[in-house]
Image: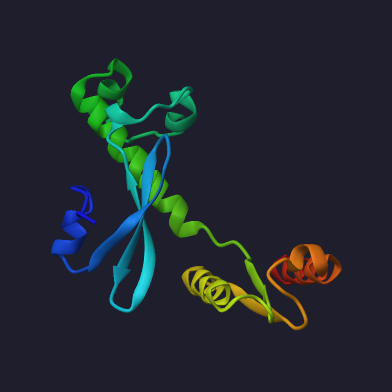
Length: 163
């Protein structure tokens, strides 16, 4: 796949080696599957401000305050400098939120799942910091249906440990 313009600096700096494919696209960003060494990761690329289609833009801009009075006035007036400042503030807030994100995660699979499914599940667990990977014996890939009580108990245990 041709490397998107917004990911090229990461390739140039050696942060990622290649872009495998686009995974999804939404109102604010696109997500790509990328390779970094032996790892497969996801890269979230935010769309330019003029290409995002937020219906309620205020939900995404409220509580974005600045100590710089020039920036605050420019943001309030909606000048080009103000929009650029607002964009920087929004991106920084998004990055900070992602860094603080720490969610207990259970990744489970059945011992009788197809090998490709097991590899996918293991890759997902490797990508999520602190994820707990569980293999459920005597289960296939529909373990949330066939072993619902066991899965619910595992989720409960994980939630108890994290609170």
